[in-house]
Amino acid sequence: MNYSNLSLHTDKYQINMMYAHWMQGSLNKKSVFEAYFRKLPFGNGYAVFAGLERVVSYIQHLAFDDETIDYLRQQEEGYQEGFLEELRRFRFTGCIRAVPEGTLVFPNVPIIRVEARIFEAQLIETAILNFMNYQTLIATKASRIKQVAPHDTLLEFGTRRAQEADAAVWGARAAYIAGFHATSNLRAGMLFGIPTKGTHAHAWIQAHDTEEEAFAKFAEALPDQVSLLVDTYDTLKSGVPNAIKTAKLLEAKGKRLQSIRLDSGDLALISKEARAMLDQAGFPHVKIIASNDLDENLIMNLKAQGARIDVWGVGTQLITAADQPSLGGVYKLVAKEKDGDYEPVIKISGNPEKVSNPGVKETYRLLNRQSGRAEADYIALGSEQEPREGAPLLLFDPATPYRSKTLHDYESVRLLRDIYVNGELVYVLPDVETIRAYHESQLTLFRPEIRRMLNPEEYRVTLSRKAWDLKMELIHEYHP
Ligand SMILES: Nc1ncnc2c1ncn2[C@@H]1O[C@H](COP(=O)(O)OP(=O)(O)OP(=O)(O)O)[C@@H](O)[C@H]1O
Ligand SMILES: O=P(O)(O)OC[C@H]1O[C@H](OP(=O)(O)OP(=O)(O)O)[C@H](O)[C@@H]1O
Ligand SMILES: O=C(O)c1cccnc1
Image (cartoon, rainbow, N blue to C red):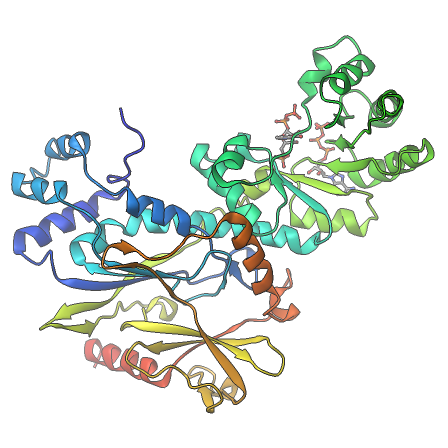
């Protein structure tokens, strides 16, 4: 069984639509789809885009092999052999544009745009959303944690609680992009070049007759990387005193105990007492790591209580995005080929937020030239001229006209970059360090009011007048 071929990592309805397009001869018609989300997760003021590397790796390897074709042949739909032959020849020949990973993104702004034969664009919807939704969610959760502990070390510990293996490694990568410092997952370390860190489990202590012996033996085995878990029996009565004994043993050998880890009890109280004990014994350099179902709220609370914690190990709550386990990103058809041109299409819904924005669009991030800060994202039709720097630009808000605003001194940056052009990968994927640094620089473009964790100010996302008029026109066409 070949588990690595992802060509069938799609919903059956995509294959059925591809089949129907093949049957009616419309498979080669061009189409444009845009991927975006409608609502920010966790009540955050922004999301952190991640998932592009996975999308690229998927597209690069996208091919139907014998096993997948045989499997499709067995389906109750009775796909004709000609269709299966078409799939055998399948390769991605279209164009993909996307925002770079680490970019701050907002509701309704196209993050990925696919322009391809409908046959191809339809197949890849499911996988693209799968990658983008999960990784963006975890990067955003990690970013919230980073916001409350900007100067502390953050370790990603989630693998054992993650929704399976892919979620663990891509989640570890997403967390690193958003500012975590290391992961416990060695495979993520090897695949992506993320720093790795590890202490030890309670089992190490339980496997010895005494805690003191367990600590000493661990220090003997790994004298340069000693981090001791001190809560197996009694943190303050035995764990910390035994760790101090081990620190002294190491000191005699010219080595240093690096850290202790607290994993239960009142982390604020215990960390303060442990800090005092370590300092008094002459080990102020020994860091205190805390873990135990932590998230951004607990960490903020512990810091408010004066906890003396230098390093936070975060697992379950981060890797599962426990308080909001899904980002509702969607992939919508915005234009279809008609008579050699693109015709805009719309999806209407009873819920005004769900009415799609028709037409092939371009998004510009408008930066205030005085402050250097991002003022708004401006979504215009691709056929419109790029906002000309300095020329007054109306950010028009039809729902609340009093919020309309004219920008004067601004710079405009195109958000979408070319990733694939006519099936060729033209984008050089940055390494994870570069993405992480880029993300950090992007954060500084946004005012603290947008970045704050609780009740952030809403960042402005505006349609151009022409994009708005087109939307209204199509709505009136269907609902005269
Ligand atoms: N000072 C504190 N203020 C608020 N929450 C805390 C504080 N100290 C610890 N917590 C959190 O409270 C939750 C429960 O802690 P508790 O020590 O009862 O954990 P536990 O898992 O039951 O312990 P054990 O591992 O010994 O079973 C954890 O999520 C922990 O991070
Ligand atoms: O609490 P999380 O944020 O999910 O972080 C990961 C948890 O995984 C480990 O616990 P576990 O009980 O699995 O093993 P242990 O015996 O090493 O404590 C570790 O001690 C953390 O508490
Ligand atoms: O290294 C650790 O301390 C660790 C790793 C995974 C999960 N919990 C803790």
